Length: 597
Image 1 (spheres, rainbow, N blue to C red):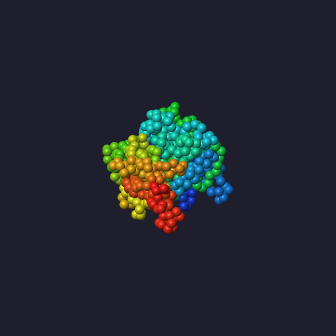
Image 2 (spheres, rainbow, N blue to C red):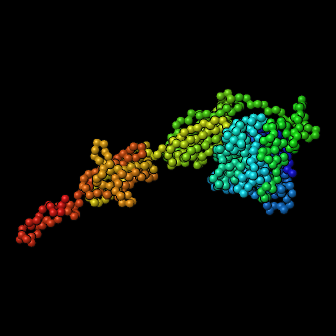
């Protein structure tokens, strides 16, 4: 069996010497070049969140079994795998497929993150024992729910219900849900449809694995960097012990794994088969008291040992019998260390034209229990609503950490092509604290001037067509691209209306119209009107162009009487010898009264 030590009941408990020794031995067995696992005295990675409930899993309990000290070799390096290693390195088929599919999906949209599927496998092992050894159906959904304990503040973080029991069946407190153990409020933001069935189900390994992958890649993390990977794992569950345990399985799986049938995976010690996790392992079941034992057995026995009294003087950390000594009590956080909420830190109106970046940046401040600023708080910014707006890099959700002054500023927000209102929500990651909501508005692209680019007079005979007429739209002295323009033939009235005479446009079906509304300037702000028919009535007419934003320009269109077919100076004028009048000038010379206009 794998090396084991006690199951954590609440964040902040000191790791035992037995656990430290086991981790050290494991690290030594992995040979040179392996990333170091942080020591008990090491500080959390930069950007990690200190509060109990600001994590994907709400910092709920997890399995602390370690992988075998003799890790499997990579394929081809050895054929002499130990039996325990072979069993422990087996991952149920559906679970393994979900992890690998997530790696491919994330690589296609966020290649810079470099998410390894072995990291998902390590977290899945620690959080749920690979979905209880792969007890899932053909679609990857667990055969029964996997629920963590009620996060009621009794030994765990206090997270009051955020989903009315929709995900976890608990309408009083939240519980971590599914094979990757998301708390409902985090799932609401990060939930994914990994198997393409149109649902986002935390109990489905494909959905949950993809959500975990997106969460680990939040912001600009590059998981090929040890510090970024540590930060990502700590954001999932803020515990140095958790980081060491996940790191151990990550290195173990990197050295080799193999597929086993669903339902046949090796289970963590003490894992029950019911809906909830085994209460003896620190995972209270529905029929047991949610209050955990303050001192779990290092071997997961059903009867926890009472805590030992603290020694008045330093002693052997392992005790004379090798049993771990009781950790010192964790002091309650002071008001200055307690997250009370987040608020707007002076963000102004959020308005941008379609396709432009918002000039205003969203800024929030985290507050402690005394009303002062709180640093190192993880804040999730999420774009919501029917919009194609997104943060820099095309991301709709980003996670950042507050600085020393308690503030954090979201990346630049860019409007898409869709106009209208949407919202951006800023929340303390993984908590049920009220969110700060910002209304953003995307307006249609505008122009403040529009002018004709040519100067020649626009004249054509009746029945003809005008040459193409070009215009240029500008906004704040720059080319206004993508601006909607309306062209209308107008009357000369004091309040012009659409003219029902003179030049006209022709639609595809041949219908004559005198207003066009589906016109848009190109990338350089240019617009060309082609195929304007003169009509049959001579005269001077006006064409008005109006842009989104109110810029207008009027131009004149002149239609002259035709010179061919009777509209000229006379079709029968004679200057010859005259067939009927001798050598005179001709008796039918005139101005074309027989065929003229």
